[in-house]
Image (cartoon, rainbow, N blue to C red; front, top):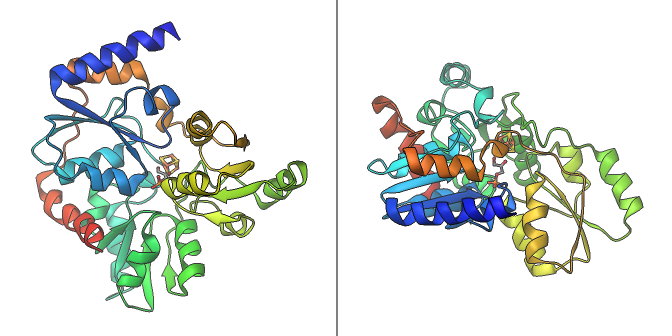
Length: 301
Ligand code: 13P
Ligand code: SF4
């Protein structure tokens, strides 16, 4: 605890000295989420808030694709990621070449790309989406069929909601693919009356067992509004940790799964990033305009 306090104090001082802001995803640990973050949110909120920040330095307490999105929207700022190895199984699950092959196989079918992807993949896409706006983005296209990449499960879940046919790619979130419908049913038996909220990166059979499905921010909004007595957040572990500090009267039933990439971000690495201005996130010049266009099109929906 004392170590945390010292780190937090050092980070707050460095933020002032560097004119820096810290953006934190909802999966960051409580000492980051509650202790040092200036802006917290799901991928959509972080992308929106990242637009036109006036800080000189932006630290992304999250994974690499999130830092890239911030850099796309703030090309003139220094964008730092405290651990450059903080990746994502979805972003790593597809390449720009894979997207070109899909487009060649399905000419004229729009490519909707989940923000959990590299800038190179975004640059090959028509529009981006997040779990918070996927339905709206897909419906805004007004077509009966889309290529939705890279998350197979998100695509299937949105297909079930919209009836729009999805051409998918076999990439998955290594955190959410592990939940099973059996496990959910077991927890319902053990904890009578528990509300079950599942992230749409979960398999469709798991989402079918849930009372509600939405992005991490939509999950938080559900808890804030309904104040369930018992809730099972079928997602990354830090969500329950962060929310139990805010809603002590709600019981957060675990199981959860850890995201090893998100967990690479620690207070000491955030402090080091602010001290050394490393690692800076840069995007190859030729990718900037096309990747930015896909993100901007999403934000305009
Ligand atoms: P959201 O916060 O946008 O729901 O995304 C979840 C996630 O897994 C991000 O990596
Ligand atoms: Fe990627 Fe899943 Fe980790 Fe999110 S939770 S960063 S989607 S691996």
